[in-house]
Length: 151
Image (cartoon, rainbow, N blue to C red; front, top):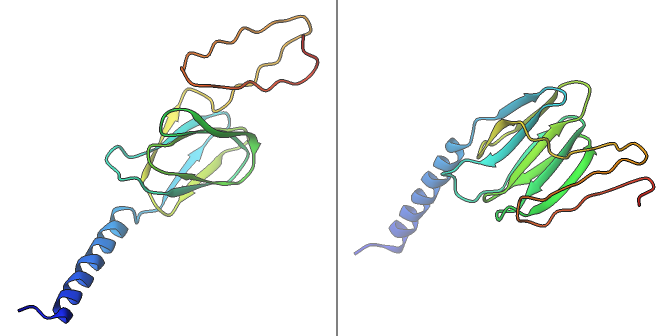
């Protein structure tokens, strides 16, 4: 028969090996330099389990974060030096609004960072009397923030 002590010891070794494997899988720190005006999309690796990770940003930037279903979670213009969490199949688009390069860094790597031709947020200036026609093609709700005098 197996003693309770042996069963507990075996379970402990199994748990310890699992934790060691998880640490090894994401142990390498990541650093990504983003030049002024450039954008990136941050997504979890396709084969990764839902995991919470954070990415730290060193300078001024715009960002938008999407829920798993593609709807907008939150966004901010001209944010400065912040950390963001990403989990499940969330994604973040981040645009460098600083006049110099900024650095994205993390101590864990359960996500991928790729260059994006789409900026996080779009800012359009209109001259007096000019109009803007906007069409949402995403199928998800969206919002537009305006300033100035609007007719």
